[in-house]
Image 1 (cartoon, rainbow, N blue to C red):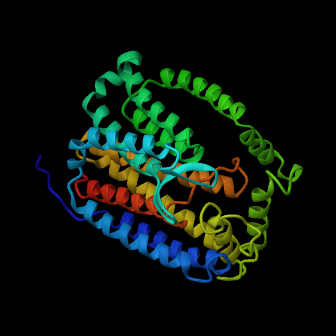
Image 2: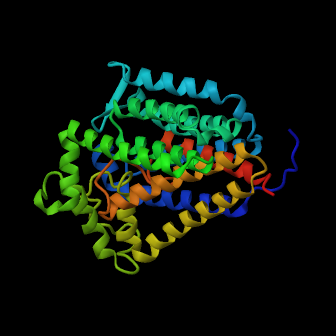
Image 3: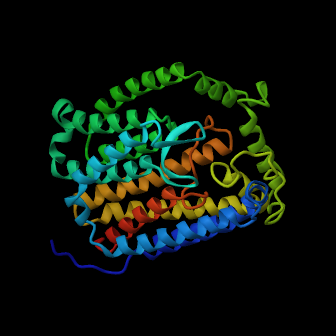
Length: 365
């Protein structure tokens, strides 16, 4: 396949690098106290973040220069590998339990999350499948059910860990691809009703999820239990005001707010940098999503278009859920803020995916 290649979209590249830089600074600010308490090293989380940021940027520049249609050839193999990893991580003694979920493979503090690989693997596979069979997506049985079945199987295996946050991002990005490919709104509407029923079933199956729902509605009912994280997050955001308390001056990071360097890092940003800092982060994400969707619209083929939609959808859904949890709009679920939160495989895979998006932008019409 021969196409004219130009420079990658500079706005996607600049917004990504700016968000990554803000993330490195804020990971250190949010984690220094905790790192010294747990490891005797103020720079423990910073050093890890820098290592994975460098690896991720290197991977981004590689995928930015690898023609995106190459991934179409390996979509099936990649998905099979991702499913195999999801099976392996569920095996006791092999999968590592962290935060109550068996979602890691690795030794000690070094590990990978197979569910992160599945998000990208599913996006590539669905983009290939629906770009080749796009006319059939309007048929419910033979067109819509197969991709939904594959997506549902992946979601079910992720929920066995359990990891509702990552599963929700996978479903959100996948449905966006399916919708863009031309699925009928009536079919999706019926499926939405089934999804709501399934969500209620998931809540009923695990009492801790019901506690999170009730804590979300009124966190002060259980301020030291299920509502603790939401309350401490709001205590961090409130005093930030317009300009914040100043970089490094957070009070909530002193063992009040759980996971200040990962799930609730936006709370620390709002506390230290105020409305200005939080709004800057959101504007950079908005710029990244806008230019990513523009890339999807102007991509030269349907595979590139759907692939760009999936990558942008993965970023947008993850940002919406994370920020929604932090400001009390959604129940608490463990999910990081892309490019900002401390992370290993999640950060590296996100930058790898953005590299693919940048490569698609090189062929945009």
